[in-house]
Image (tube, rainbow, N blue to C red; front, side, top):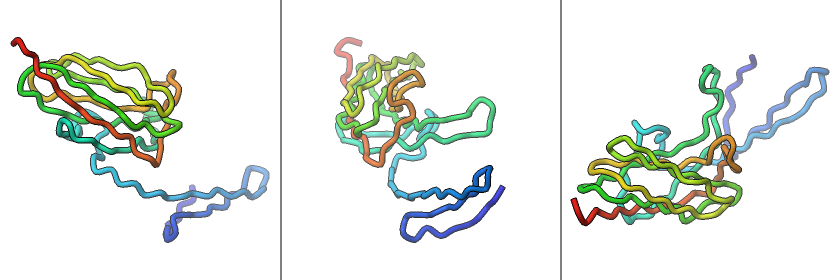
Length: 171
């Protein structure tokens, strides 16, 4: 294994590699910084709290690969939480989905029950709701499952969502 430390001054790094027959080829890596104030939030234990009614802008990052046997590929999953003082509905509205990506929403009630949406179309908005009990409801936004179009897709453009809650009128 060849290891080299390089400085990325202009956002691009060229790497020259010799193939199996000795033929050279070049790979160009481009560093595109994106700031996502909600990362890390890749599982429920890192869920970031959001305020109902306030739009949130976040990113789906490229899949990460692992040498661990049960985690060959991990797509980006973004977990958030919202507090409900009474049971009711949580509505997640992803109003902006970057072109070439699709999203799926899952909502986990404080009681542990989970509902998962269908996958949006490429670049299409998605709205999903679920009835939850009192407490912190966890929800996540992912780029679909292996069988879905857009699985593992990512973008340097943000997705934008708003979460709202509606309390039950009868308790």
